[in-house]
Length: 573
Image (tube, rainbow, N blue to C red):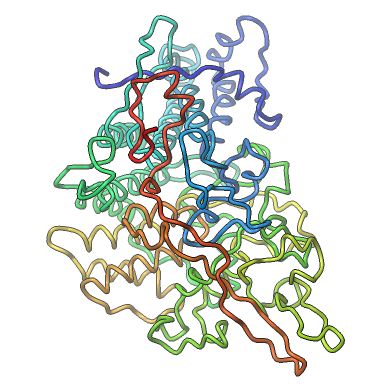
């Protein structure tokens, strides 16, 4: 392809083979002719695929970092913060620079390592003996590789804007001069890969293949990519703007709408799985179900850290008094996004700051641990006692059980994704999905796209917004105009919380007030001598605003190797 620029990824195969024992594939050929033998056997080709599935990530934001394996991007979003010692793991307070982005480090390198694996596969597979032996099986594997490459590029453009594209593995005589493709070229490339993969992938898979791509999974990636591309961040109206960031297609909202609607049509416009209460809602995130379009199961077959139970959130997110590490603490700012049970918001409804946990919507109780929540057979206790001779400090307070440094600084912990049926925090929950794409997101994608069409279709937008909101036992939303758009955004924040969306959503909406320049708020709880527990709103940390907060910088190490790489806006030294 003439418009594809090649990138040199050194140490690709060495890095993937040695970075962690769980990444090493059990491929049954080890001699000098191993690669040829692999490509002669469809079963061995399939094993090659499994390591590339690790590119989708899972419970951790950076699997090659000890800390980053145990919490995700929710701690860098409006949803919350990194809790332990208030460490600035994401450098949101110190600021990013081309040499240091905290736990985000290696995003560029790691995605390109996986892309190189895909490209080496694509270079050889069509002419391989394996393809000749079993074209039906190998063509599905090829489609899975295209899906995974598209997903890697989708992640890259979310973090960096336009990036170098390549569709073939690097050779020694290739041109090492690297330039970035435009954001629009990248979107086109991703969509092309997905369009090639979609008809080859199965619509569904048997239970023992949960975690592998289906047609719906590839369509879901396409839906998200086109929705993001259509968003205000890419309209060229303000910095960062220019070819590395802009998406200029006049059909952008229709394209985003069509991509979501294709999934809706394929599933028959059905309702989401109904729930009767918070517990049933919680259970939707603990095992495979029909609403999940793509997820990574906890287990050794497809997920690289599937034998490290300490990367599961039961240990890493439970409150400190239970022995949990409570690494990501939801903020009060974010908790206020959850409505009241009657559908009113916390600004204009019946919200009582003195009793913030009363009469909230169902998802508040399903997704958050808060002072007084019943979790694992006792109440969560964040409070400090005014008189320990009368009442002891709360078990989850800074003076409670466990490591006090893990006690929540915000008065909240994450409950979503935690399996309370397990006997201990380190009991393995085999096959538990880390959900990456699901049907509720598609309905919200469609609602947002329908609203933003040149001839805004508010009726259709409300219909699919309410499919999500009313499933959560909220009354039907009747808002119009700007209020409807805000309702769609709020629903995304709440319904998709802690699933890796908010960090990108607030940026693509150019919602600066939720990106930086604000105080991260929490609740400090006190128990008086009479036994009355009351909250006080506190500022936990302040996140400053930096002009460069919309994208990560291109790593300085890559710019040093290829000075032709244009640095992102705001990072020029």
